[in-house]
Image 1: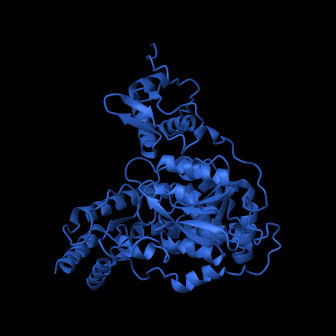
Image 2: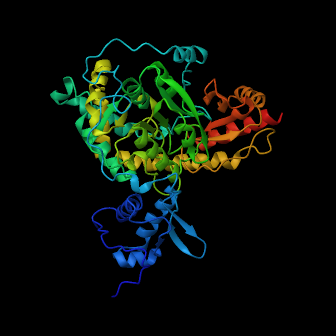
Image 3: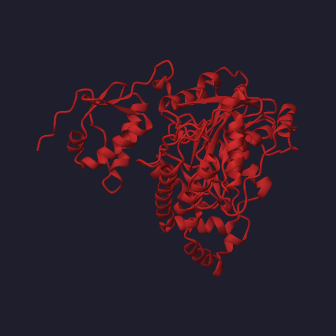
Length: 516
């Protein structure tokens, strides 16, 4: 059978697919790489899914899934009545062809391109750095709040559906570990973490995120917060600028402030962090971002903005800390590829956690690091805690190897989607001063605008009186933000913490309180 005629602007020659593995993922990765390295230029017309499937000898569904993922990440776009094209990305913003396709193999130890000289890459570690005066004033002015404790309630932010965790399976694996433990597990462990777990995490990220990393690039941490703190300790010079999203995850900002960094709150728009504002910060070589689902606004960073951010890091020899805290939760298609999957210069440090797919008390996370940074991070961590608790790592490794982890993620994603839908379906409408519900395509929370700070406080007080837990958006802004106070107001609601029946009951109480 003859292959169908394809547009002259696209040639599938060279795309080789291994039929023993996921065809749609392989095709997606092949097309994405061709966009990034310039072989598929912006404006190139792609063949219809049926034609490409026939040319490659695969099912049309595989092509459709690959195209859907590329659509979701902004690599391609549809033109009504005219087919599918590679997205046109602004050349001034996005010098795609200048981005190298090879991972950097070396790194200077001098600032601003290397590790903080105060953190001592040679491991001749000195007493803690003196906190910068302005950072200390910031901590005193607006101290870090303690996360809510006790059983989860509607609508607690940052809590997954851990009532669905397979505790019986976990208990059996844990009992099996302690019934006859391997003696090597009872000695001091590798400060970078259990080798088997690191390998399984790397395999998971390659298959689910398209992040081409190895076990040797991973350092296990006690949750995402420790990973962020390690980045702050090793990359921040006292008095140096650190860019954080504003509004954003305040605990990350506190980690950088404690390390002596001078915090710069950078605005977030509908495409993510404002890179023009970031580029204007002359003293800044470090940026902390949550691109897959901005915390707390929920914005998903566009492809153009991601590449613009990478270009900034390459141009300034800076670092990007990517916190992918709830990236597993995407409700149409596969999870988006992280910023680190686009990085070809070794400028992105990726922070991951098990807390949002298992439960926060697990305190298990990881860093995916450029190869040249792994040893310094592992040794710095060893100074604080020597190594992670051994049995939790071993049990999680077995949990992943036996397939329980992937099955659990699928279950958690379905549950979060159902709980999201319940919240959206029963949300009280026409509440004075509250904006419309947003489109929630990912994550475990949503954010609504409120017309004034006074109204936000009133709504929160009424919700607390109805035994409903809601966070105020104003708490996520840096105290010295230039944004007028009323423009910082809003409501942040987590929707995954409790089952659907509890969500409906909480919304009934909320409706009565707000409409009284």
